[in-house]
Length: 164
Image 1 (cartoon, rainbow, N blue to C red):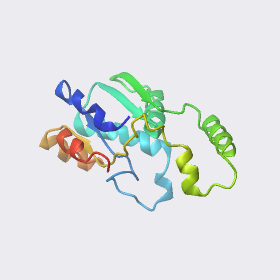
Image 2: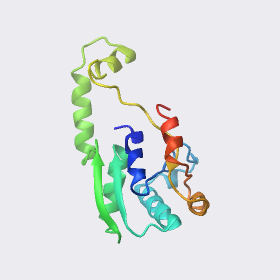
Image 3: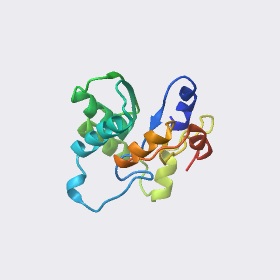
């Protein structure tokens, strides 16, 4: 699901989408000690603290869903719900299944041809790739969020960045 599909929720409630360390517009430090699940979980809490978010509904897609699960396992106060989209719940099982699917590809394909095998059928819409930090927040929340490692902007900007 392209994250822009969540933009209409901002008409009813505050919606915040952020890029964790190493993705989108967030920094990419060359410090191996930072690349831990604990660091990513701490970033989620840091964004909450920086924006004063007492109660949240947390959505995670793909790796973001694995991160959301890890965050939920810490049993934080105010986590009202957890929504997962295309999230493997077992990295070892995902790795085994990926290898199985790769092994079933026809022999002799180059990388481009192998990628074509995984594209959705023409009658289904292709999934867009999204990036960048997007959120609906006040200017004071933007300052707080920048201090904790994320950047914010309005949902209209997110819609204008579709496919980036």
